[in-house]
Amino acid sequence: MLKSNRLDTLAFDPEANAFVIIEYKRDRNYSVIDQGVSYLNLMLEYKADFIVEYNESQNNVLKRTDVDWSQSKVVFVAPSFTDFQRQSSNFKDLSIELWEIKRFDNDVVVLNPIKKSKSAPSIKPLQKVDSQSEISKVTKEIKVYQEEDLTTRGSEFSVELYEEFKHAILNLDNDLEFIPKKEYISFKRGKSNIADITILKKGIKMWINRKKGQLEDPKHIARNVAAVGHWGNGDYEILIEDNKNLEYIMSLVRQCI
Image 1: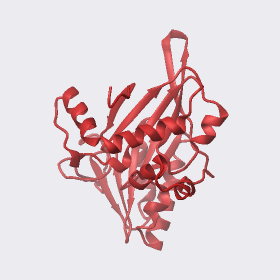
Image 2 (image 1 turned 135 degrees about the horizontal axis):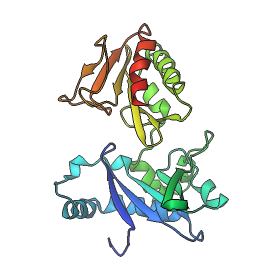
Image 3 (image 1 turned 180 degrees about the vertical axis):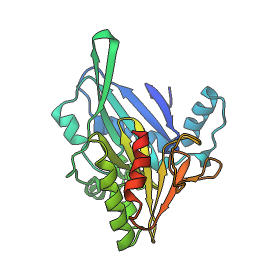
Image 4 (image 1 turned 90 degrees about the horizontal axis):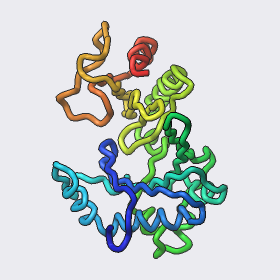
């Protein structure tokens, strides 16, 4: 219970360093946009309360500066969603996610995300209509990163290099997808992180999601960063300034699939 609001689950995403509110629904008579935005606004207004809740339930201490509040999000989990619920949350820059849960024989439970459409609009026009609304307050502080947010940081050359490696990674498996994060673009297969790429001015930097000692790299082009601070997942980092080793690097990435 937080400020008279009963949250089903309060989680913390260590990759984004952000809180996630998870709500479970059985019926379909509710507004995901109204409740989702209300919860996001609650999180931003009572940051200290969320940190206290975390510290009281966990063994480590979380400080306010340890949290990236701009990456906060709300996730709704339900057996199904109406077309209206799907459409109302289909904004590319709104941090509200819908996940459908299905239970099969032998107690097998499957969770599937409702992905936003590629042509999903921005919610910012709604923000301009009423600058004092909850949506406006939330969108000013919470940022949902798009691929172009990261490509604009690079040069024409490095973006072309990124595109070449992006397509090479996606071609390794039909189930791979890329998800833009604050500092890098993550390549995932289901819930498993495969590799991450950040775009620099003179090239790109890639992290391969293998722990120290688990990557077979006979050419030794991947740097072990297990004891060094870095953005991406995994203990191996590669600085890429051309496409000469593209096929070899893909053989390293393939070890994560």
